[in-house]
Length: 417
Image (cartoon, rainbow, N blue to C red; front, side, top):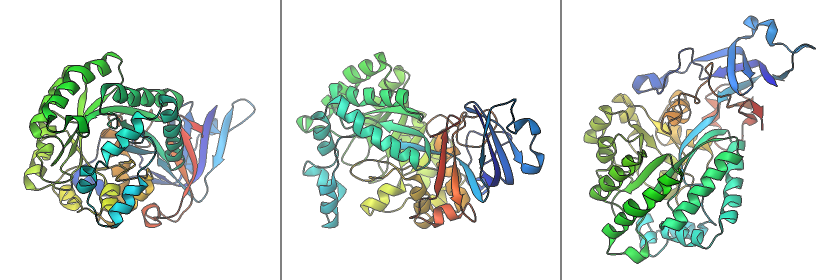
């Protein structure tokens, strides 16, 4: 059945000529249509425009089956595109939250066997069935919060069997949910305890065993490395990325969260789709990114939760870069997939304008996971993944009302969910 959304107060993020990304000063621009309609044919955006130009053929009648939704006073947005998450995990790590309150740093918790290694232990002891059921609840949660496309990483396995278990769960989520899902292999998330002092041997395991087996089962779209102080070196990173590229896995890099690690430069060198975190970003890193097609992706939820420094978001945009924002949904440093709250953090903590954060969580987030040709904006021929707000006065009210649930109706693949 086709769908007509009519009397829309404002249709947001409209494109007549779709772009793959938006950068620099253009991020402060946002095309909208007031008093609008949106027509969805099956699972595709077919048409949109002003209500006084609505073709009669789109109206429901005895001859055609069209469901109508009256969105008077409401806004319609393209669904959020969350390009960096770790939402397939077992259990939680709230005990570490208390450690943080008591003053322990992320690195100190990791050295005590907490952090990623703690999640790896929990995941190892969880069946694939239970892991899927836990993860499905999180998928259902982020759908209700307006997300229509999500990237999910492995990385809590840290051995071949458990990494593949995670990736099989992600593959099952792709099949059984209406979301657009991209899978990223992140075996180089941390060095397992049994490889302490033998880090190069663990890198060898990733290269010689994990990557070939994962590629053989077509379990991953991308490959990632945590290239940062105390984790994987630039040399480790480059070895892993070269191996991944041989199997068609384009890089997405954790970079410069804890220090000037060289991760941004390594990511650009190997044509990474995105480099993520970027709390430590200087002039050299910005210049490197300006010469690339790599999307700088900021994760303000993690910086907020960990009390870390903020990346120089304003300087990056003013230098001409694009920016994406993602949730980093994970059990240790950002236990939330609420992209509306990420918008608020983008405004409050990073000093971005509402227009800039909307571009960052829609079209640029879609680019950072390789799907901006099919989603991330309201454009004819794109996937009909949108949400309708409750009655609000402006699109700026979305990040402004940071604690309010303002999403009324979610539509994925042209269907109300």
